[in-house]
Amino acid sequence: MDTRAYRLKCLEGCAVFEVDLPKIVDFKSALLKCAVAMASDEHRAPDELEKEPSPDPQQEIPDKDLAPQLYASSVERVAADLATDEWWGKLISAGFKVGGANDRGSPAPPTIWVLEGLLYYLKEEEAMALLRRISSNCAPGTLVFADFMNEFSTHLSNELQTQFYFHSDWPEELLPTLGYARVRVSQMGDPDANFGLIHDSPLSLFHRLRQIPRYCKLAPDGSPCRRLFLVQFSVA
Image 1 (cartoon, rainbow, N blue to C red):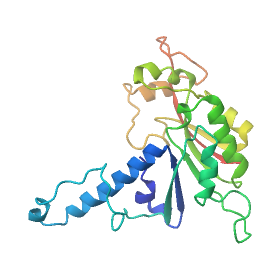
Image 2 (image 1 turned 120 degrees about the horizontal axis):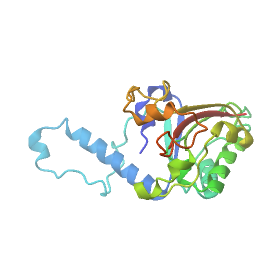
Image 3 (image 1 turned 180 degrees about the horizontal axis):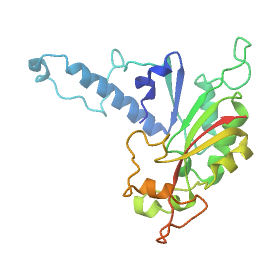
Image 4 (image 1 turned 90 degrees about the vertical axis):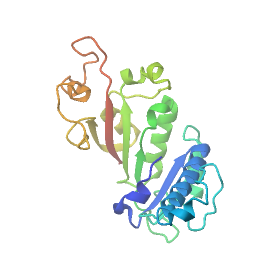
């Protein structure tokens, strides 16, 4: 449920596109309407609120005056399955500009992609196709941010009651073969990937993992090294 378009001032003047499964898009739209309705209630007199029930996220609420305030210039939600080929055509139909010339004949600008909590839910061929689609259609300099699981992390599927598929122990070796350059890999807990929340405590799992060379698949105690990489890369 990403809300960057509504909370990041740096997105002023930017067009934002969100691609997700249809049921997620519908639920998010309803939830945002509900949130705006509830926020507006905070400015109403208590006796007025007592006469009305709380808004229901599943209930149809008129769009008028219930659109959250955007920092981005626009946001388009595209209902599509990223595991299939349909999403790209739907994204283009929603107004996304590819790397060629735009309607005025000038080059389309580079874009920023955030593949957050996504790739490891796709099968290998699906994830590779998605990454190739971006690199082959977007302008040079386009930035991509993604998180990658290593192989042992995908073995958590049973424990977490979900299914993980795609993985890469060495994203910096994989991505150049898919049309990307300037690959920067960080592990959770690194100085540029701790978000002020993860500290170098001996008790911290992330801290202990960072002390073990990445080529080691097992920790000294024999437990598997399960790593999550935060990766930044750009279209070559």
